[in-house]
Image (cartoon, rainbow, N blue to C red; front, side, top):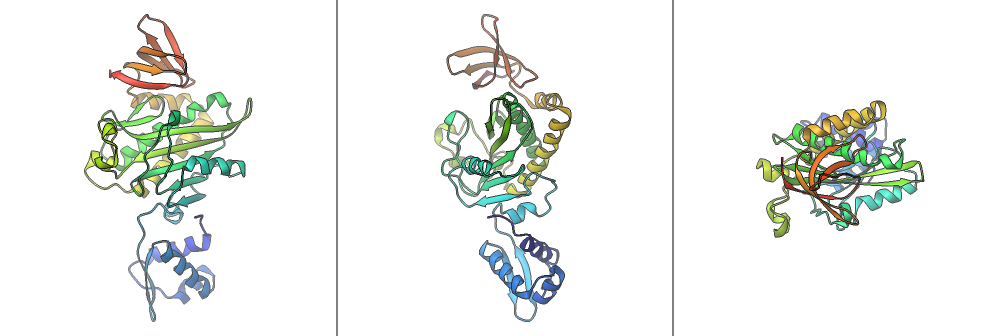
Length: 330
């Protein structure tokens, strides 16, 4: 579902007058549309799940929005200039990443947001499944079009991790941590993951598809028994329901601010903030690469976003991609 501008204006007008009925005639006059258009939009809003109370002599009164991340709700009070301004919503989809890939081919603009209430084939890095129960988390893909070399795409992942951590801390009282390359943790249990995929030529990035999954209102039974010691949700950590919409809007603003910093000042300022939240550097880790495993101490993240590992023989390895497990946290 994409956004109709006049329907958005109507919804905002109803919300502003939420304590009173307002007539269709007054709404039509305010929005400079016909009363028929007002009636059609009201009908559409109610079909989307909005509770709008009609009264024959008084007009319409806004009562409540559905508990869904609808584009109309995302845009209401959204503070960004670009990210999320064009939003496409699904009740359920295989994977938002797959939809985003199709949209990239069709020329979708930077900042386009694809978001779903649930995914049937949500995925993380290395082909892993990302559990996406309907209405419990945030499952999104953002289309970015940065002017960077394909080898610099991992920087976007680190940037996104910082944005997620900041958004969580802005909305909840918990402290978020980051584990290289793409995990956001709370008390060393995973609460969010990032999947960055690119559409690129030899030396040019056409688009970066930034996929983000955040466990928000899940309870422990949402996760398979074998994962319950390693994953968590914001509800599990705070003991209360968290506004998915509030977190999403905060996340989009955090992402946009960091993305602008990245484009103007480069990656180093982002890396500095990332290291403040990191739990990888200084820890004993196991890195599973395509052709081998390495065990040792994570000693740094370099200016490209690669992990620097000192193995048990003292040899230094630069790891651009791989699966990293914390064996002993610093």
